[in-house]
Image 1 (tube, rainbow, N blue to C red):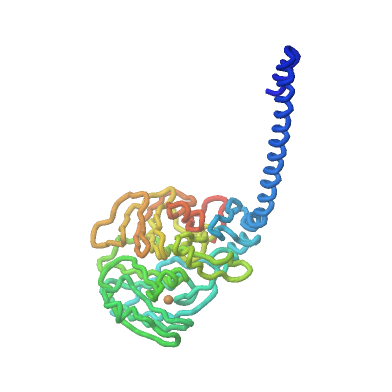
Image 2 (image 1 turned 30 degrees about the vertical axis):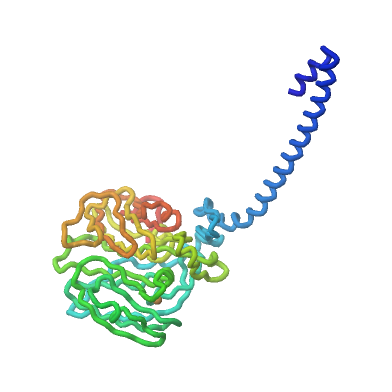
Amino acid sequence: MASHLHHSAPVETESAVFAKVAALLLGILVAVLGFLALLMWADARQSRDTTTPANSTAAHGDATAHNVALPLNSFAGVVPENATELAAAHKPVDATLPSLTSGDLVKVHMTLKDMTVEIAPGVKYNTWAFDGHGAPGPVVHARQGQTVEMTLTNGGAIPHSIDFHAARIAPNQAFKDVAPGESFTFRFKAGDPGVFMYHCGTKPVLAHIANGMYGAIVVSPAKPLPPVDNEYVLVASEWYLNGDGIAEPASLDMAKARSMSPDWTTFNGYANQYVTHPLTANPGETTRFYVVAAGPTLDTNFHVVGGLLDRAWVNGDMTNPPQLGVQTVVVPAGGGGVFDVKIADEGLYPFVSHAFAHVDLGQVGLLKVGNPKGTMSH
Ligand SMILES: [Cu+2]
């Protein structure tokens, strides 16, 4: 525009003076705009420089290169540089359904411990754990009609309790708080078949479940389900961290737990463990998954990629016939489901929560059918 006015200047004297003034003003405007642009560029460069360190921490490990810190001070996907080796060295939680015991009474003794566990490669967390390997606690397996005798010994620092969803019992009696150092025994009849959650019910329950106090009890029906070749138990849960857990163990971030913004979501307490160490089946076999969503808050939308849930006992309801050939079933937080999957062809079949943020945060595993090429054999 300035050059147009400039060219037209010689035509008439008055308009030439006007044009020169206009050109001068426009020139100043261009200079001012240019200076402002320079300031904005410098500002943008500075803010990019200041965010780089956080992002580069998150970017370690090729599998998690796309993970960057979210505004809620997320530690999603933040793992140390040697995460791949750590994942390979991790001993996966055995997902195999434990066998039934004979007799009318199933005795279970759990000792609560405050213990630090890994929930992802190189990511440590201070749990309040039910027994043995941290979270989830051990799988309890009973036959419908058996009586479960539960003894809880509190080896932790604060009161805890245990609430079995499989039990019809007065909670103020059976699920009462047990003081540190004390033991408490109660019995209940496993009268309803299904797969149920158990958890600490001490207030605030959100904190006790988020700290790893949960597990699964399978009550097999008196009239057995159709026989299958493999039976696995998956307890889905999410973790809310107040730090990345790498240099020192993380603890619970209650604000994140309340806002339902997990850093990691897992099957059996450790992100992606069955991707690195797949569950196995042979071609033509049927695999039964007992799935509990422990939460504390989020559901799990169970789905097997490349397969269908041939028989789905939705909500673990075994008094009605299963649904047949369904794609995805919601396992609600505090609920369970039983799913039979028959796979004919060799391959790697991911099982996921199809609410895909869960997959991104670690709630995914593989069912390795046969021995497909290019996979490790174990
Ligand atoms: Cu507790």
